[in-house]
Amino acid sequence: LVSSSKKASILLWDCSKDFSLTKKLEGHYESSNCLAILSLNKTNTYKYLLSGGYDNTIKVWDIDQLKCIKTLTNDNNSCLTALITFKNEGKEYFASSSYNNYTIVVWDASDFKALFILDGYHREGRHLSSTCNNGKLFIVSQHKLGVIFWDFENRTEYKSIDTQRYRTKHTLF
Image 1: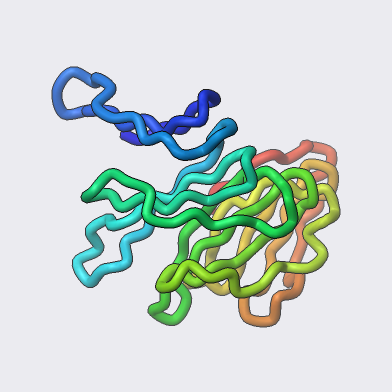
Image 2: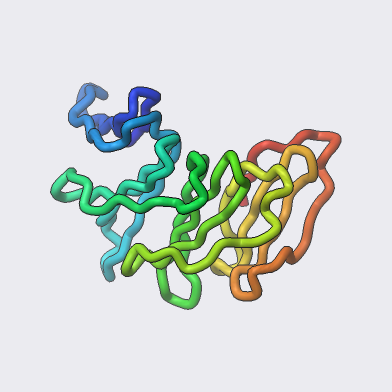
């Protein structure tokens, strides 16, 4: 089990025995608040853990070595609120969303380079939830507007569902 902490640590727990804390990964200088796992190998064994935090960074942790191998920054100077991983046409990606400026950055998981920022997310969106349709659509819930589907290839809004009266916060597909 992996959990994030307001004290800027990533916590690893042993759930096979006594549910004890086995390791603390230190690296963020402010609260870490989102986690994701990348597989990146042919056997689908997990290789990397991603953590994002209020310090405007994404840390890439090698799961075998339990150490940070790379720090990615979001040039938009905003705390990260969500990380998701997905595959599109056999290639692995991850996306991060930011709280202050409402952006979604899509990253290439093979070289950890930012590919693009989805425009239009600034409309008070906060919750990048998941992907669907084999990684072709992003799902973003926006509590004041509803649920928005973003087209990965065209980088545009595909469809929206008005859920404003329900003040939608999170979605799962």
